[in-house]
Structure formats: C-alpha cells, structure tokens
Length: 449
Ligand code: SF4
Image (cartoon, rainbow, N blue to C red; front, side):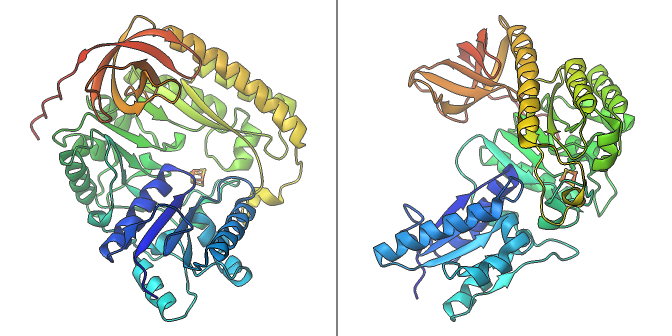
C-alpha cells in the first residue's frame, strides 16, 4: 500500500498541538503530503486527549464514523491512534476496533515511521510506554505560520495529584537540557515566532539535567532570543515557586505577565485529598508574593468543583479564595473520575446536579470579577500580537496582550496575523477587551545576549 497523504485530528491541550506538529514533521520527512480531510487521507492520525470525561467513548465513536465514511468511499486507509488515549487504552481499542491500524503513545512519537512500516507489512502494532529519556528532534516539528509557537521544556509529570491521569498518559517528568530549549527558542524566533510558550505540566519545577539550572535561569536564557516579543510558560505549580525564582522571573522584561497557577480547591481537606502539597492560605500568600514582585502579573487558574467529599463549606472556601485573589482568568471543571487515579476510588461522590450548580456559582462570581478587572483597563494602551480576524464580524481583528487577554479591535489595511499592534482599550466584557488601533508598532530590537 502506497501511503502518500496524511491528515491529523488534534484534541486537547497545547502539548497535543505541539505533538501533532511533531507527528506532521515525521510524516513529511517520510514524503507524505497533507490531505484535505480525514476520510480521503491515506494516513489519518487521531491525536487524542484523556483529560476530559468519556475520552475512550469519544475515540471509539470517531473511529466508527471514520470506518463508515471510508467504507462508503471505498478507501480503507490507515488510522493511527496517538496521544493520551493511545497510552491509556490503545491496546484495548486496537483489539476492539478493526478500523484502527496502529497505536502510538506520546512517549514513542519518534517511532511513527517504524509503526507505519509495520502497518505496510500487514501488522497492527501498539507502541506505548516511556524510557528514562525522551526522543525529541525539534528540527522535525512542522511549525505552522503565525506568531505564536510552543516549545517543550518538560515532558510528563511525576506529581500524581490524585485526580489526574497525566502521569500515566505522559509518563514521569523529564526536563530537557537548558541549552537545547534555548537553541530551539532562538530558532523559532529567528523564523518569525514572536511569542514562544514554554510547555511543561509543572514548568516551574524545571531543572536542567546537565547543569542544575532552575526555571528562573531557563527564562532568563530563553528570553534573550533575538526577535522574540514575549516568552510565556504553562503550567506553574504553586509548591515549586521559591523567593529566589520569583526574584529572577521579576527581572526579565520579555517574560509575559500571564501566569497560570492552578489552585484547584480553596479547602485544605480537599487539597490534602488531591495531594496538592499546599493549603489555601499558602496559595493566597503565594499570589501576594507574586504580585508584590511582579505588579503587572495577570494570574490565571484552574479549579475542580465537586471533588469527592466536597462539602458546601469546602466549596464556599473555593469561592472565597476566588474573591480574594481575583484572577484575570479561571478555567473551572466539574470533577469526573479518571482510570488508574486514586480519586476514582474515593467515596463521597457529589451528584452531577450539585456539582453543576456549584460550578455555575463559581463562573458567575468569576465573571463579575473579570468584568470589573477588564473594565479597569478601559483607556489603557496595550500591545497585542495579532492572531487574525475576530470570530464575530469580518471588520474586527483579534489579538492577545502579554497577559493573554483577548482583544478585539477594528481592522485596517495591511494587517496580518503575527503583527504587533498598539491598541487603546475602549470597552470590556468578562471575556474580552474591545479596542481601537493606535499605530503600527515596530519590532523591538533584540537585547544583547
Ligand atoms: S501537577 Fe498537574 S499534570 Fe501533574 S499530576 Fe498534578 S494536575 Fe496532573
């Protein structure tokens, strides 16, 4: 079977987006060309996410759709299951579904070529698991056009929060050498990437395996990349910030003001059951330390509502923490059990109706806070990196400031995605700012390295 074209469907987080770019680069290196859709492609990869509920059912249902459409078109083709569901349930799905040609876990992406060779030889391989190190060839990443790019700093996670499937699907934490990361950031910036986001599940736990440099050292070195506008990073864990690290972070001009630090719950009993390693009061104190060192910091967070055993009083503590810290963005999730995780066996399940009513209260409180914070920005001038036309209306464009806030603004001739624009904020909603463009902004000169 001659495999000439490919299509990749990407579900989930920024790590999966970057992994898909890696998979695409491997396919291109093998001579394959992009196809118009998943049905007509010779090779279709489903790069899946296991963080949301019913992940396996969603994959099975998509496989069924693809099988039907391919049968109707008389084109069986190759379907590969990649990403976190591949690691978690790939072997089972391979046994269950004839539509599936092979399974490739996130720790084995570089073996895509070998998996395709095996498929061409009539096999149905399942390639999963993790080594002590990770194969990672940054030069093979097929980076899309545009000003925003991702660079991996840490693979996997070793924290084992009791609700989280990531340590099982992405393996234990492995930091890449600082020199490799910095070289990749410089290459990406040289190629036109204006904002680079360093990725890691616990990015501020970064420790260079070659030199012992910490996360502050990494930021300082990566931020020197010529042509870079902003260096961002996700996701920070509250327990890994030190005063020394915060001091280093505060002194780096090109580091974005967006700082995503999940707190998950405001109740200490729940935080203990989650194995998060801090108390609600410690989180509030951390937020104050971050704001004191970095007055422009724009704190964002994740919250889980309805964790097993969560009482009304526990939930009130979560609400109180939100009111006290006043996050610029909040991503809330109703708890649902994940395979292999300790919390899946916890007693004290909260009914879906109660959990949903709590998260609605949380969103209402956060929405009011966000509106107030955003309204406070009216009249300010902000610099944004343009992403493209805004979804609503063709006359508006959309970009994000270095605090990750969405800014919709009036368009003008010659604008393009990847440009920097200076905008005066004229209006605000809870989830976006509205503005008018002031004048084109010249690219900033690079600091001396
Ligand atoms: S630190 Fe984040 S990725 Fe790691 S186990 Fe906890 S929630 Fe999951």
